[in-house]
Each structure stands twice: as C-alpha cells, then as structure tokens.
Length: 444
Image (cartoon, rainbow, N blue to C red; front, side):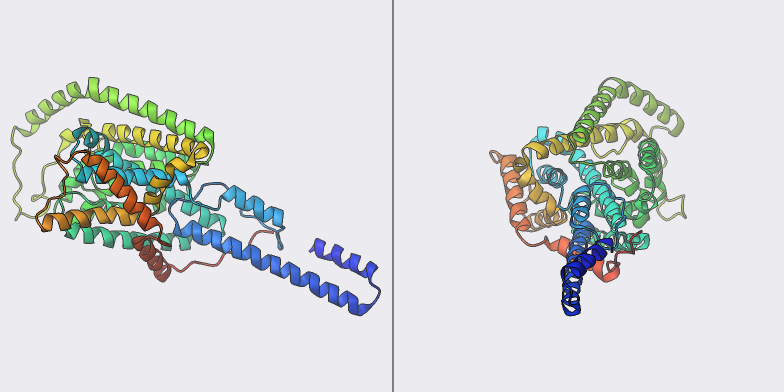
C-alpha cells in the first residue's frame, strides 16, 4: 500500500489535470491486481504440485507475506520452498522398484542377496520422506491441518484398495501396499511434531517394533486387517522405523552437499555396525537364545486348535526372529542393515544429482510412476504364471540385465504420459474425498 501511495503522489506532481490523475491511478491499480493474480496463480500451482507429487523438494518457509508481495519476495519464497521434484528422491525410489523387479524376475543369487528386503526398506524410506515434504508444503501454503489429514486418509484408502486387489492375484510375493496405507494413517500422529521427536520415535521403534510385530503376528494371525497393521515382517509396524526415519530426513534440505554427505556417512556407519553384529555376534546369541526357547517351549510347541476361541487359536510367537538378520525378518539388525544401505544410496544419489543429474534421469523416470510400476510387476507375474510360462528368467543369458533394461524402458514410456495411470487415479481420488482447501489468510 505504501508503494501505491508513492506512485499516486508522483502522478499528482506530474499531471495537473484530474482526468489524467484518474487514468494513471486506474492503470496502477490494474497492474497491481494483475501482479496479485499472477502471484496467486503461481502459488496455487506450487501448492498443487506439492500436494499431488511424491518427490518434491524440501525447504523451509515461514509462511508470512505482505498484502501485495513484491516480485523479489515471491521469487525468494519460491527458491526457499523449491518448485520441482527432487531428482535424487525420484531416482532412489526408482532404484527401489527396479530392485523389486530384479528380485521377482531375476535368477542371480548374488543380486537377490543384495536387493531382497533392502529394496522394501528403501521404498518405505522414500515414502516417509515424501510424506514429510508434502506435510510441510501444505502447511507452508497455509492449508489447514484437517485438510492434510483428509488428504492422507483418502490416499491411504486408495493405496489400500490397490494393495488388496494385488493380493487377490495370489502371486508368490508379498504386497506391502496395505502396510504402506496403514503407515500413512499412523504417521498423522507425528507430522506436526518436532524433528527431534521424530528422530527419537524412529530410534525407539527400531528396538520396540520387532518384538511387538512378532507378538502381533501371533495375536492377529486370524485377523487379516490387523495383521497388515501389526502382524508380521510385512506389516506396518515392522516397516514403521524406516518410514519414520524417512519423515525425519524429509525435514532437511536434500539439495545440499552437506546433507548428502551426512546421509552417506550415517549409512556407512549403520551398515558396518549391522554387518559386524550379523557376522560375529548374532550367530552365538541366536544359538543360545534358541536353546533357551526350546527349554521353555519344548522342541515342538503345541499347535493351536483353529476351532478354539481367541486367543487359544493363535499361532505361537516366533521369538527366534529377534536375533536374525535375514531379509524380511524385520528384526532390529536386519532393519539397521537395510537402513544403512538406504541411507548410503540416498546420500550418493543426492550428491550425484548435484553434479551429474543426467545420470539419474532414467531411474527418476521410474520413480515418478513408482505406484504404477510397483503394481505392474504383480500383474505380469500373475499373467505369466496363469498361462504357464513362468516369470523367472533362470538360465537366460544376461537375464538380470534384460530385466533391468526392460524395467527402465517401461518406466520411461509410462513417465512420458502427463501422469502415471495409478498416480492419476490417486489424485482424482484425493480431490473427490479431500478437495484442496484454499490458502488461509497470511499473517501481516
């Protein structure tokens, strides 16, 4: 408003006639209104991208504006918040999906040993990062907390439906989408908490989630919906440490070299600690622990009566999994190893994206349509097994290379669409059940 007054006073000095003064004032007001409309349009587009995409950049923003923001203030806020997708995050998500394809279609045992279990944790970690960034973006744009909760609940329902449709295909591989949807809901308790609280929660879950998960796999063995939440290595509770760790990482600027180095260094430390324990400590601990379990439970624990009332019909807890590090055991040790690899891969990707982002583009294309690519692999396995061909390329020369190239090519083709098929459906579902709220009034 001060700028308007100064401009008007200047026009009064330059033009004596009342008619010229009115014309100039009208011109100035029209220009100011156009600037406001343009800036609001840019802000709305940024907010739409922030809500609908899963790999957007992460920066801080204080959410304060003047009545008529200047061009420099708008550009500064855009720079601080980021306006596009994070190539590194998309690429890492794409690598996770690519690893799943190699695990499900490949036959190289060395490759399977690397990707098995670790790609799941990497995929979930990326989900936590995206969740945190989406929350910050909506809050920075002035959206109400209830609007974000509604959007995440709607998204969880959609992902859950897709997950159960894939489970109906009855392929030999586990589907994590129902657990993924449950984590979207459970994380609503944390997205407004401080970074320190989120980090502390991740550390506590790393220790407490495995025994609770094992107990849940026994108590909820006959309740499929509850099993998705807390019943077994593929449940939400088992994967929550990785998701919450991702929420903490999403609070930091992933475009900075310092962040990339910290992530890579932390990953190396966790990987060394996890592998050292798994190689030199766990074998002895596991043997003694299993001997103790046998002394308590007997060699063959009593099998439950499936017709008995609950909890007499439940399976005995598999406590021996607590001291294992094999893939998909979801023990603290397996999670530490998987998170170490995930941190290292993410840190390296953030570093490469800063210097040679073109290298990551093929993987980022897969990551932009990760939900569609994830679902396609189960449909392909179902079709190939249904017609009796089989889905493994065992015995085919360079089979894993063929799978990798085919997955990258498929992801690139789908990414050329305006939006991935399932990603587009999810956005429409979001808008139907949680329409975007208008940006609240800014603080003067």
